[in-house]
Length: 331
Ligand code: NAD
Ligand code: TDX
Image (tube, rainbow, N blue to C red):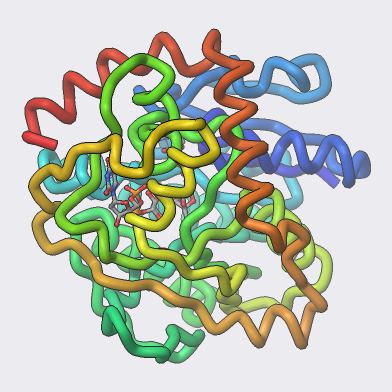
């Protein structure tokens, strides 16, 4: 089985490749990644001699055609993934998330490869802060940011290609992920590495917004279950069920780092900030037997903190440029 993983020099894709090498040696893996600011080939260093790495763009139709012609399955992680960046400059989001996905779909259509498209719960918009309702596979799309709008558009392209051209495609929409190799622009690694570099953590607004946190290995296990047991044309929502307000996460992070619970700054809120995300993952649990293994968030967060403590060589070079971008945004 030959598998092309797009965007696998990024956070979830790199962890997917590690997970695959550990648990599914039957896959031969090729990675296609443009190495944008968010991609880091060092994340694949431990498995570098077990995979083929191609430095290139998913919008490059000729290259994509050549690579897809030679594989059985494509797992599509590549995207511009950060909401704050999309509010500052949406153009790369439209290009990579929409044109890039279109380019892959055309190659998959031509060569008959299977596609699994990785998406997000943000395509559904948000939920009431204090409600207990959840997104399901049938929730109408209502994205808020340029990021989520382009992810929503990419999902709709996949659905249309599956229905009109009968390509063999599956999709998953996962909640917020955490774990090793996540870029320091994202909430949890930003706060951990702020403490490590002597800067104060930054909480948007009052920190009441709620996210559902899923360990990246639990997400990737779900992706493998979909690859082996998922039905063509189906969408699966993935989420641990562990919902927490940002303020609670930040205070727990500070506690685990031995810092006072109030040692952080409030910064101006993100425009259009989604209030709450929560996925009903009954379908993947009952139909495919998925269950998250990282049930203890505190332990998962401690392990993530330990990883960042031990791997400054990996995140250190990104830190100053990331904080410079945030200061331009006033956050
Ligand atoms: P990331 O930003 O860490 O990595 C994205 C990768 O894609 C990078 O390696 C980058 O170099 C590559 N890339 C960007 N543009 C490219 C292009 N034009 N051609 C080839 N490669 C390109 O993102 P992530 O957090 O790992 O997210 C991966 C996927 O999972 C995305 O599709 C995202 O929407 C989705 N997702 C993320 C989360 C989360 O919590 N991080 C949750 C649900 C879904
Ligand atoms: O410094 C910060 N302070 C802060 O309070 C940052 C960077 C974020 N936040 C808040 C904003 C969000 O409510 O923390 C929450 C999480 O922020 P992000 O890490 O930027 O994630 P989010 O916007 O929720 O989107 C993430 O999950 C869904 C991923 O980045 C997306 O790619 C994925 O689709």
